[in-house]
Image (tube, rainbow, N blue to C red; front, side, top):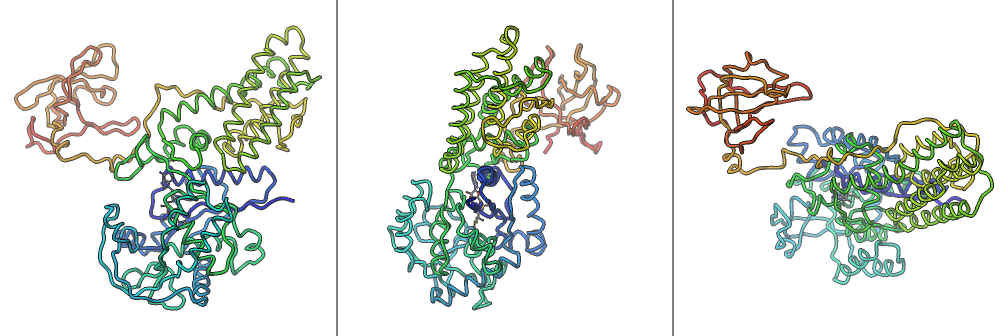
Length: 618
Ligand code: MSP
């Protein structure tokens, strides 16, 4: 009987601009969901958005819209990205939906009725940015901004009551928190006495949240609300059949930074509500930009959309899945992206694909030849295919996605080697049947390798499978029918020319420079005295310019956009202290400023005649 497989991603803060970290977890969930579907399991894959809390309220206020309008306007950014990344989620939950609000209130009421929520006056240090009370020690760590002393009445969840039960559960269920080192981290945290959890916010301070069912002067703390999404989507309280089928989930995929909320708050909440705990919480590491943490203030956050636009969706999915060892941090660099693409996708997989299809086209009229009588070498390929299929399945079940991909690539490399050893391009001249046997074997191995890679790269592998007219998509040797006419296709993974290499686009607006840096940039007004073409270069003009009392020469690539007549007399802006350079053998002392969009270019000029040359430009 088919197993069921329920997998979730964190629900992302609706305020955030989607970045590579969000994309990573969602792709990972998508890849795992697809592998499990291919294994014949029934899958439910959930993702969504976290829409309540102070930051959303503040952002909405700043934009002058209601918080709900703000959320409705922000949410499509995530949906569009998921579509572009070929994410096939089964549900998309937003915590502002009615279905969720009701479940949060029902669970709060149950926990309250069970005597696990009490009211208390609390005085402590409150971090506005984190939206929670923090300890003295945390305040001293310097990691929290906007700390203020607050005294207020609030509701508390008796989390401490479940401390021992949680420790026992973790010890009795070795897979409950993965990987192992994260489990130890949580057990370490639980060695100290566990406090109770403040689960309310007075409306005088925050009203963008879910009302407490037993006191509507308060809204629910955003984490108590958000975590419950995982059972709302399963159908809790509304559709028992669905809820009993899907909950508990097989995996909550999370980043390491939200381990405590998932591995301590959430299970104790469920214990109090007498609901089953998730089977496993899996915390992955962080994507770093090179060696540094990605952060908006550093301006080094990688935007997945830029990458997709440049290289296509599948290479991005492939790189993210292949490069991160689940559980550890990984470093994102364009260099490693291109290296990985060229070696695995262009050289290994793409090469096998084009070799096999081209040889079948040129020697067998594009018709898959007969498999013939298998020799020892063919048996080796078959055994290796079967071993790869079973290893990939076990590795996926053990959450070793990068190893499963590597296993598949090893198999593909082995088939390339088999092709080299057998040299069907030579064999065909001596014995066409033998060449046919080799090409059938390589093509069938390619089909199997393609099926194994399809959860990672659904689009391009789909093109290959169409080429083979493989509708059954069965992961078993011998399913490729001899006599199938191969479809032609364009190369799927053309090599990336290293010279084209680009650094990831960063948000320039966030990449600040100091005023000192700006001041040192010698931006000055200058009058164009003459312009003539640089010999042998259609795009370049040699300009003589007047900079106050000084006359100098600069070279600029504007000859396709302006005639000399249009330029003479114009008051332009130049970077006067740029290191002198020789361009096409012509001396250039400075650079002019222009704005360009695609093929259009416009000079930055001074629009009042009173400003003379040599003046500082700000
Ligand atoms: N809203 C909460 C989750 C509530 S779940 C009930 C939240 N949202 S988030 O948008 O800030 O973060 C979502 C996920 O993105 C987290 O798992 C976090 O670890 C992950 N990442 C954020 N930056 C990341 C990287 N640079 N690399 C990998 N994942 C990272 O937390």
